[in-house]
Image (cartoon, rainbow, N blue to C red; front, side, top):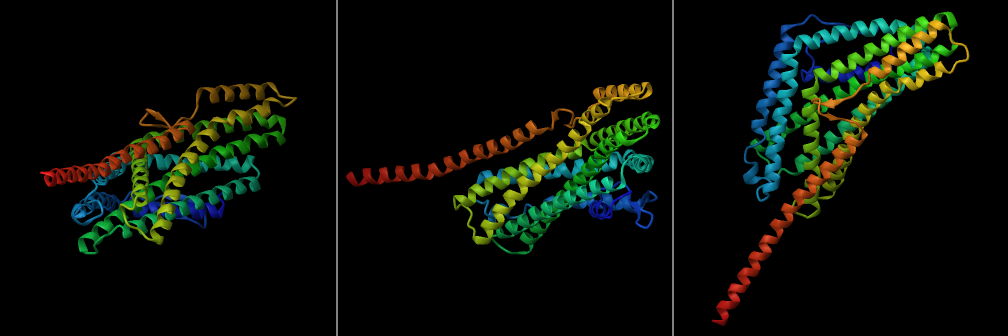
Length: 408
């Protein structure tokens, strides 16, 4: 049972991933039967994925030509170093993304098969337990959330495209080629983020559906409650293991995305400082789209962190929903035993997202993330102040020499 709106939104996410070869194999979507099946693992799509990865990697070369001679970075060493660091991180992101897809291709295909089996198995359980209207309302709300995320990603892409075009000092074939190469990488990062959002929305759907199933147990017959609760507990454990498996499998790829988001935010804010100092000339459109880029970029970063935190919280807060069943006046021995087993399972298994198993992403980490971005921008501003003071000292020294010569 899938709401049509959520199905259409997930189709948009899927086709974005297929175009940029972010899938290890394609899926066959049958809308009439509302089911998903794996296509036969074709060599054509594997070759297509290989060529897309090589194309994006070679595109990095075309982003560099003559930018130091004719671009706005010509006299700013900080912008030049930022550009090369960003270029290096983009190369790591491409290698991390497609390296994961190629090296773990068979594991990812097995994950697809496992996910489809899981979805079909527990879909029947949800139909039998959860009220259809409540489940469809949940899916409709998640579809609206996903639509907002897609609009947010494309709004940031639009603002970034306009600002990149305004920064072109000279229009020629090489500059336009570098501009198109940048747009290609922006679209690739957009599709990766969209795919990550899509996975998080589906995981959040499953955990929230488990909450609905636990709440629905209040109205069921006493003799059937303990069997239903056992099925719900098994579903929660399978969903948690599925989430851990997805996070572990795409750990390196997601880590490169977060690093690139960090560097992109620093670049955007530092460019904003250059605009405010009139170091980079702009017009009214530049101011509007520049401010829009800052807002949409940080909004997108916070939205991704918030969605990730929502998935982790919805998994770990299942125990609060389970306490409502424990407070019932009449609980049989079998039901009490299943409650104890489920409670122990929740205590032993908590979902945590860590980047490369080191940095745990939660709300405090999100605040530290934003604070680190601002701190790095402030450090870069110190180099600007030093460069601005140096010409003043040189002029004062020249004036002093001229005065000494006139006196002599």
